[in-house]
Structures are given as C-alpha cells and as structure tokens.
Image (cartoon, rainbow, N blue to C red; front, side, top):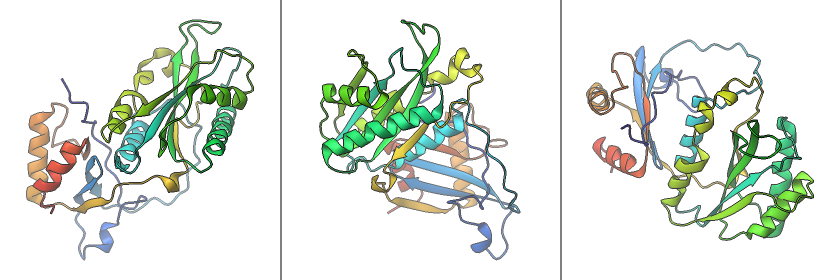
Length: 289
C-alpha cells in the first residue's frame, strides 16, 4: 500500500522558472542536468533541472478546467510550508450552496467567497489569513440529484472560535439566500499536527478527480484553490536549499526505487515527500545541522 505521504514524480523543471535559481549564475561551466534538495516545513523536494534556453514567448492562458494533479501538488506544497505552530489556533469551515442558488460561473462563486470573508473579518475586527478550496461533487438528494454542485472548504489561521450559527447567517447573507436550513459547519483544528491531518482529509483530497461526471462535464470550473490574505500566512523557513552531489543523488534514487514501485531512476525526475518525519530525517541525512 502506497504511503499517503508520497506523491508521484514531478515534471522536470527549468531553472529559469520563478523561484528557481539559474544554474548559469552558480557555475562557470553548467552541467546539462543537475539536482537540488529543498527542505521547508513538512515538505522535502528533490528536483531535477535541465539547463535550457528559456522560451520567452508569452502564451495565452486557457480557462481552468478540472482540478489537475499538478494544481493539487502545488496546494500540498504550500500547505506543508505553513508553520503549523504559528497558525494555531485554527478553524475549518465548510460552506454548501442550497438548491435554489446556482453558481456554475466562477465570478459568482468568487464574489460569494469574498463577501463571506468580509463578514468574518468584520466580526473578528481584523484581517484573517486562510486557504480555500472548492470541491465539486454529485448531489445525492434534492432538485439537482446526480448533478455536480460546488461547496467550499476554508482553513482559517489564528482563529480560536467561530460560532456555527453565526457562520451560517453570514453565508446566507453573502449568497442572498432566505433558506434557513443551510448546510454549513465549523470545526476547531486542535494541535500542531492537526493542520496536516485536515490537509490530507479535506483540503487536498482528490476524490473529485475520479468522478466521471466531473471529468467529462466540459465545464470551465475556474480556480480550484487559493489563499486569502497571503501576506499574513506564516511560513516555515527554508532550512536547506542546495545542489546535490552525484553520491547523494544515487543514494536518494536507490532509496526511492527500493521503497516505491512507481519510481524508476532511469526515467523519473524529482519527487516530493510530505510529513515532518521525512523533513527531519532527510535534513539530517544530507548534513543538516
């Protein structure tokens, strides 16, 4: 059984992409391929880079369709970079649309989320950082049984308590609904490890990726996740970010190939590991203080 901490290999990345240093600035004679190891928070990234000439043509972005594996990986990375000590206390909020409120267009859902969060911040008297994720699932009852309907998950940091009835009233007001029995929930996230558990259980789950109705709907879903007040999110420091030696690369590849049957050193590039155990262990193994 594959460990839930292991994610499939990531595509080979160009060093000219945002956030990755160019090999030309670090080597007099750059190698055609090099590896880096980065440890931040509960995330360990082994990345393989090709020294290539960057392609400068600006490409037009297509509307966002289904939630891709790459987008889920980016969300996992960001959440595992969060400092789980500094974000506590935290709450987890779920907001569901009633049958009579249809929001198939991204602009409407974006407005609903922004208005709701404005009410929350006004109630608390301050700006509050949060990760949000929208999930599409088939309705099991009601007018839209069998059809895809969206609902929101939000993880709010630095918040000890939010009244569930008050949150329901705020969501009702934000979407312009008069229905009294809206499906909303608020749960406290307790402990530094709880953030990781909620990430695995709710925020980053990819169950919707396997729903055929979702995959074949042809809808342009818009953004599937984002960050509210991103400048206020406390991130863990990068404790390691360096090139790897040939000996270290071989060691890591042998270990990966022996542990996970999907990994082949001949064909696979870098990969990510999530969890404090991996971050601490590999940091120490690679000479971290």
